[in-house]
Image (cartoon, rainbow, N blue to C red):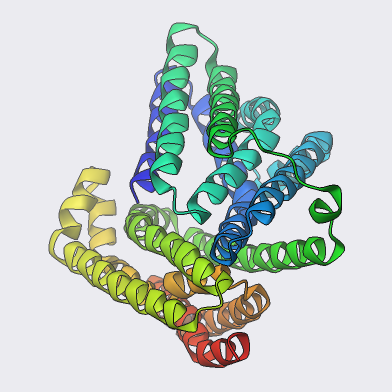
Length: 418
């Protein structure tokens, strides 16, 4: 949770630094490119999630060699993806910014930022693996230190390169490349110390066909699930934009409610990945069930607490984010719906963590696709309600995700621990 809280500060510092240059095209370009990177790297978040699960399972099984093999396999896969992204950077940028449709000046600035920052892709994906490997062993204090360190270095370098060194958009991109590089080197040094310098893995184990196929299958299914989740959020944004600038602005303000709620629930989902993965690897149904109950209980408490907090103080948060009277009024109209999101999303977040920990990725993928179809159907049935219907459909999406996974859970437990 604490690591999650530092992440939005990156966007705030970058926006503030570029904003001080006084050119709205530069600010728009960085914002456009940042959205593109968020979508691209979110899509490859399976590297962190799958690494948490496989590492926790190997830890529970007491397989020290497989612990090292998981790290090396995931690092090789991350490097392969990162190098591929760099190799296709020109057509990738053309496709992404063609879809996003910014002005020529904004797109030019976005491309400058994109081409420089993309060099950090192998390192950023490597950091996903390092953090996942540490979290999978419940070494969350080290993972927190690394994540916060990367973010703080990024913020400091952004402020220096943009404002003091006069590097502009290029400076903001270089700051990210440098911070990811430093973070990755620091992560490898930490791992070297934890393993006492024993990185080696027998070749036949590292490239074991069955384990590689399982790795690719789980990563593929998580990637498809993540693509469906991205599609849901993009659809939400697109429908808000179609409703007009005021509605779009109000939803942008209320999206902060979703982001804040996710800080807490994501942290508990990570705990579910580790605890469930470790007990699953140890083949202990009793410990697995105990971990599920623990995470469900704490997540429900946090979800309800955040929802109550939004109901009581959501107006203050809205007024802090925007000074526009029109946007404030529009956001307040739908605030109660946004406030319900953390409570409605409890099961979705928790069961995602449980399913990832147990490597039930295929079922998670299938149920996500059903939930996405439910979301789209609900939107078209509620379209006459305008923006309220959009928010209600999104809440139904959250409930469908969690409800479907809760329904499927008993059968998966019986099959896995029979």
